[in-house]
Length: 258
Ligand code: GLP
Image (tube, helix red, strand yellow):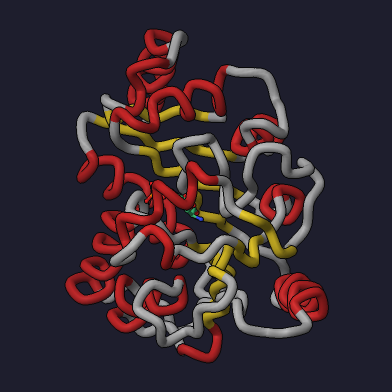
């Protein structure tokens, strides 16, 4: 995994958004994978700015989101569909019918998950997947112990994740206890992954993801198997990386190459 350490959250958001923007300019019909949570909000803000101020055109793009809470309809303010509409889709010119978020309200969730995977295949696969990391190192909702070959399915959330995500709900008991989530195996099929990580509470998870052993206990560590993953982090999130000097040295070499 390539590690790009940025001085602050704004810089990492801008740099990560630039990777998305470059792809959309080069491939107007790109298939983008999006994530929720607070980490990618700055990246989405920058994409909105690039659209409104610089005319970045999303009209040919198709999108797939990683996950959705079970039991929350898309118009629920804490649903991930609502989050995406509010934080990105309503502010750019992507056709809403080409934005996909798993449904958390289908009774036959197995069929629904299989169909979601099928739609990704029919769209030509995900060109670029945006990811955040949970404080326990998970990607999407692939909690510790998830198979590294897992596909889109229903998952039960850990107490830690429920507690972390309770900040978005009025009461902790309102946080859904399960979700529909793309699997680690599904995510690894994206051609490029862009991971955004900020804040001191992610420092341990990031170090484990990048420098620890590949293990289902830290599902983000599976990205070490991915051929093109770029991790953008701020100084606080980078604090526990042991190879810090080497990452900085690589970054300096790259600047020299350009
Ligand atoms: C949830 C989401 C993940 C996200 C994680 C971290 O668990 N399913 O996709 O990466 O939260 O969220 P945040 O960026 O708010 O720390």
